[in-house]
Image (cartoon, rainbow, N blue to C red; front, side, top):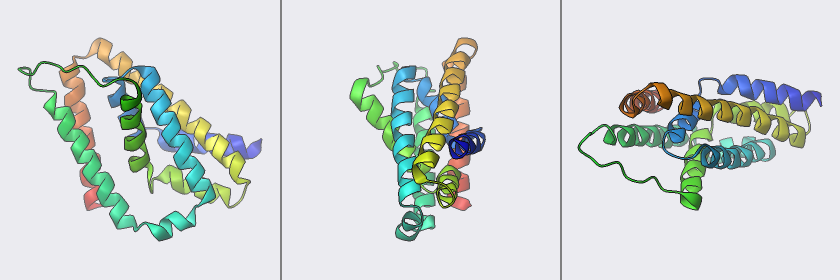
Length: 183
């Protein structure tokens, strides 16, 4: 039980203010909360499983620079998509729903989590404790972080105009993307 609690706490703290929370908040402005939570939960379950089982093999198979570049480009793309919604002349389109929305969230989360500090934390912990306990704990910690971010994103929509949310999201996505590309 110690390993589960340790990994849950470590991952929760590591995710505070991380790009996963930013993505959760942003996706929550576009999709139903349950869609974001389900898609992000599925993605974090898969990425945590991979990091606990494969660990160092992923680091050896995927060059860190390539992962960081792909992530940076992805986040710059998210920034561009967020800015696209600022043009008030555009009619807001109905967001995609169902399986397609879940797929978008899953893919975005998986790509953004590759090589992330959470993945490295679960890898490290799984060298000291049973992988299944670390997988369970890290997934719980990440899910709590995601749920917190989704409901924060929904609450922001009640007090801020959607254009402000999109502008702030675009700026934050661009900053993370630039940091990944330059860092």
